[in-house]
Image (cartoon, rainbow, N blue to C red):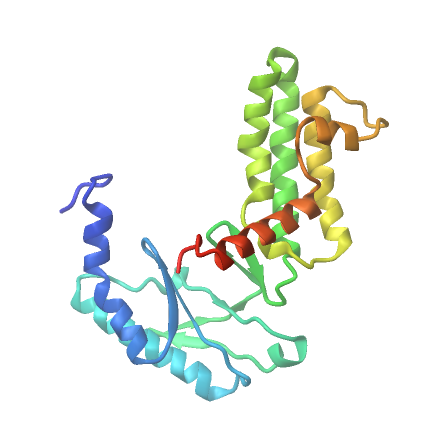
Length: 235
């Protein structure tokens, strides 16, 4: 009965699902909760029956708790992501819960980041590049009618935010993947400053005070490390 968008809504939701954490801890699962999105995970050296059976028993306990609290477990929205080496993943199986079979996914979205089974982030990068160029093409259609500050706001909102979002996860990826992201940044800088494609992009990025993509990733790692060492980060 709580209206959507109310100030008390988030607090009441936390109170409502508080026992869910106790259930997961009781069965020795690690988990993350973000509003109404719950992720459970475990680390194992084998994908044979014991780990999968353990997950199924955990989901059964969650389903029972939800039924007792006027909720329903939607198995159609459930995703199973196995992360590991190719030799290990070939031995994986399916989950069965509530007469529904959940097969392992090749990738799954986690708060804006697309994780894949090998943590290569290839799918995430392809999606970021495709989405960024889509927005850049739309901005290019109206660029002549926009002032530079207005165009810069649009580019930062639709493109820069995507490149910077959780970019610390991309530390150590291969140079070809970094090049794809760098092409997005270069195209955005050229669009903003009316720079020709044959002109050198480094002075333009310096003018805009933008680090190259690889250095942005390193900067984010250094910043997180500095905050952790100086007690400026969350526990």
